[in-house]
Image (cartoon, rainbow, N blue to C red; front, side, top):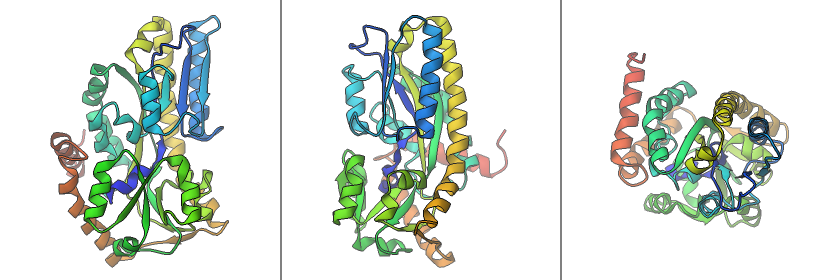
Length: 337
């Protein structure tokens, strides 16, 4: 069920700026699944304003929100052919560029808190950014969008409770679907834009989602039961293609880097705060929160332990998988510097 976390606001963090054949005016066109006027959209606009000021002239900067440019895999394709210069992507989309980034988001119940996520990300950051650079991208900032939790039409608290339900799964995530099936779960591959109508019609019964996205998309109104378990963090990165980067003036490069790093800090800070705020808002509108007891939590941890060997070498490269565990071991032993 690690697959479950792919839902993502999935969505929501990480940015990609790509130099496009269509951008003869030196403009940047950015696609994102994030809702208009959301935290993520506002930060993208702040970066764009900084870029325009540094570039000078009539530089154009457009942000297409709400998945109007397609799902994350589609936006990655559009960037490659120059129809978009960038996209706000979670790991689901970023792994289309560099698969090893899945290690930050594909290990259920591994991270106990945001401090662990931050520590591992920063340890892996130099090598990860080099991998993106070697593929033609410059990473400008990192962010996240909250913890994945399970929103279902019927109450559920144990792993076994979900076996009678149909899960939303990313259409491009074939490995996750195979893992789900092998464990007795039923994945239904869809795009993010199909989630709400699918759950309304009964095509799916449960959606792994961050609370913020569940609130913004109104998923909770049809799936009013939330399991309060931090299944996995939704992680993303702000990247720009080397082509687009090289077309910027040195002054614009520094301005964009500074603005992007600042945006990453703000996104991480505010997104984490908005997790609980979103839950409180949904509870006032009928959301029922289910907290697993000690025995039920043990069942979830046992499920995660079964998943790790399946994830290693398939969804996450063995070397990268082992690196994450090594960093966590160091952090938890108190040797983190």
